[in-house]
Length: 387
Image 1 (cartoon, one colour):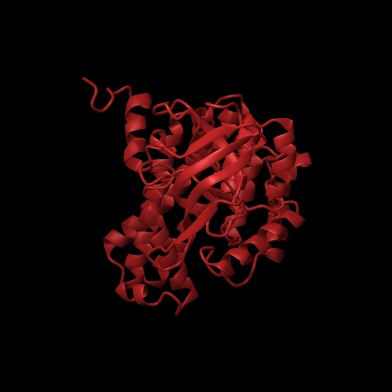
Image 2 (spheres, one colour):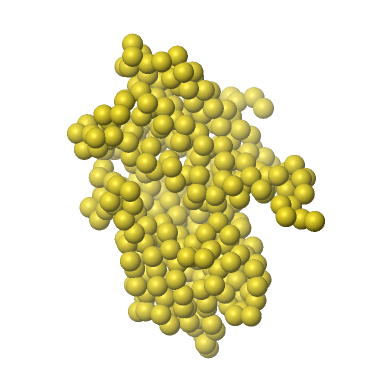
């Protein structure tokens, strides 16, 4: 693959860079995982939408610009180069949105996509349950059909953004007698529906980026079902593919982090060990490799291909790269940095990044499960436990 930009792509990059330099907040926003910070990030989502940058790959009728994946990668590079805040609506625009594009009917696309792109409706991801984490096939929450409604009951946990979001999506068991992957249905629900109780989950740093959701005979219209009844597993796997593969973690994020890491190393070079220098070099090279690989994946998809089990390999790579970069930064800063969470904006950013990176090996499907998928589906090795 030859990575060379056309004059049109270069002009597009210049347009993005100019807008971002004029609009990205000069001071970091408060963390997304508290009410104040969440509201700040939602306001930023709406400012992006006002510039028509909400989700550039979507068709114009759904609030996008109709651009291709290469242009999206260029946008992401410039977004993170400018220090753009994390997206409050990442569950919507990067995960659910593409899923609705693929599986939704025209009415659902018209109803949900444009408000999502404009930042008017913020979405929570409600996959995990107390007894079903990375193994989503063990889901037991139920959705029983009652006329033109489903009645939801059960519990979801570790639901991303659910503490403050407007809507959620998840899969529920519509056939109580079904087992594993069968009998699951993908359903969208308003988080303010009577019968839904949110219980925020405090994390290591005390903030509440997740929530438990309790469903007590919650009535949801059948029109909120995505695809057919019992087809939820296939829909969820498509969503998980977007999460693990191309959309959720673009290379621009890691290239920007690698650049900051190089700058941090130069500031602490006199005290840094040779191993720290090696770790910084490896991080920079891995971020570039991830970018080149992602351009290749995007080109494959634009040519009509699909991303399958390779998404699991992708997820392992970016999650471990994220942890390695932030861990190296903390080593350069020294143990005292852990005591300075609010004392210095730069140190705070690295500390927050390090704490969050520890979860990357778990969310979007734990890396242990992803390695099993890679072993079985890409390498052809026998299934674990198979006789």
